[in-house]
Amino acid sequence: MSGKIIELQPGIYSVKVLGGWKVKTGDFSLELRHIDSDLKIKLKKTFWRIQSFAFKSRAKKIGSVDIPKWGSYSVQFKNANHLKIKKSNLFLISSFQKFKPIEEIQIIIG
Image (cartoon, rainbow, N blue to C red):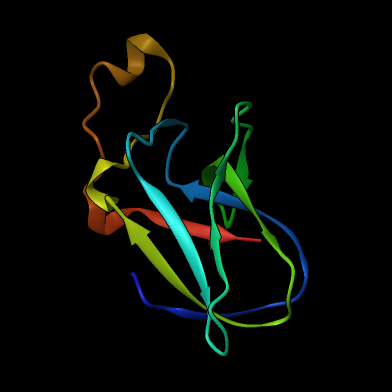
């Protein structure tokens, strides 16, 4: 959901996609905008996409954000329809799976 407001302290945060380990980002990007200033922070895509479990779901790291200033940030997604996820990243299994609908994709920043 683009436009959601989150509170963040200074630091480097991982950005993960929940729901599967086969992730295609395409032209997808994420931007955080500080509410009280003109500060804009863009997602830095990661080369090594670490897979894990988060919130009892499969998670894959797609990047990170470096927050220099404490405060409230508005989350803005660009080209969200380019983000594609399948539960498994194994070729044989994923070839029989469909990509998840965009409405079921969850992103965590933490």
